[in-house]
Image (tube, rainbow, N blue to C red; front, side, top):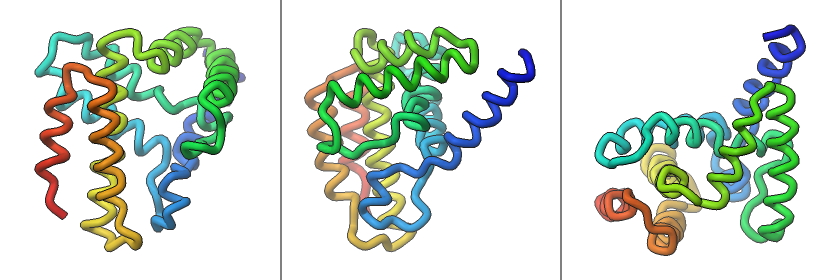
Length: 182
């Protein structure tokens, strides 16, 4: 790895840690998680749940650890701020830039796979992405006394998403959400 790539890596990792998730900011959650926090949590869920399914566990971790990386350049729009095509185009341009800075062309392939949900691994990780958001909402409501309460909204939306995008983990994720008590 050359000096320029090392500097790029330092900056990208720093930006991932600094970028706070906009959905929580818009709901006035104090000290909301960063994109890095969220990608780690999604990857951890994959680590915990993937052994139960016949999927490529390493690839699930690759997708989970990079699925929002493009947001450090493209931003983290909440639903309705951009059309789906605008969001995809800006994120594709961003991940292309990041992949060039890190000399990792696989990031573009992983982004496209995740966005298209073209593999069982991509569907699995996308469902974990939604599950993590619900679990984070439960954490905020139960441990931070956040106002307004966010778990009900995020669990309702998460359950709708999971039903619309079935994967091998859908039933387990829905079961987890139903068992959460705040």
